[in-house]
Amino acid sequence: MSQKSKIEWTESTWNPVTGCTKISEGCINCYAEKMALRLQSMRQEKYRDGFNLTLHPNELEKPLHWKKSQIIFVCSMSDLFHKDVPTNYIIKTFEIMNKAHWHTFQVLTKRSDRLLDFIDKVNWTSNIWLGVTVESQKYTTRINDLIKTPASVKFLSIEPMIGEINQLFLDGIDWVIVGGESGINARYLDPSWVISIKNQCIKANTPFFFKQWGGVNKKKNGRLLEGRLWSQQPRQQRLKVAFN
Image 1 (tube, rainbow, N blue to C red):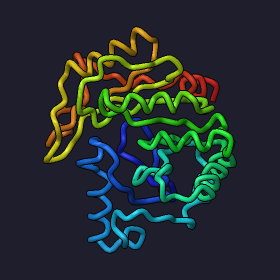
Image 2 (cartoon, helix red, strand yellow):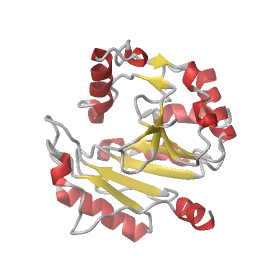
Image 3 (cartoon, rainbow, N blue to C red):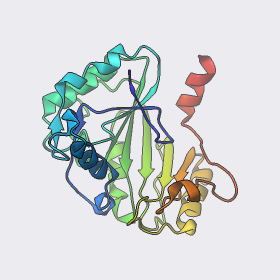
């Protein structure tokens, strides 16, 4: 069975790679690191190395055995484009996504520079969505790399949002997700930052998804923005649902 996810914008997770290293300010309070160390303390075999980057070849073919169509977040506990993930392993991961055409795969990375190495090395089938994390204005340059790829759905994850983003380049972007940091050391999320992104998305006619305010008690803080839920999906997903 697939690993069901509590992440609001996906349904399941698939982790043929676990572990990572910090690359930017958004990584400081990494939820995946905390979870991996907790699972290691529980003696779960998959996390015996804690949050050290680890390949799991035995996990590669699992989506082929999940017969029910679902939206799958790829490497929720890592970054598929980490420099220590071999090129051939990334290619094999894409080949599984190509074969499992009944699923939708969401690949999210902070290492957008490495994306460019795979433009002509993998088959960018329409069931593969590609996103980059843009936690503040400083990292909007990652969008430029994303736009250069042939992915049929390109999305931005502004999470954790740790600073104001005055201007987003949304031409060619199919979806924007925004969320605050959660946990005991969560950094402040200014409502005006979120409203600015929402307004930019409305102006560009780009679907907008507000995940959470975060904080120490993220459930209590909820995900209402200006009195309503924002759970818009990419047009491609809405069309898929409509025709199924």
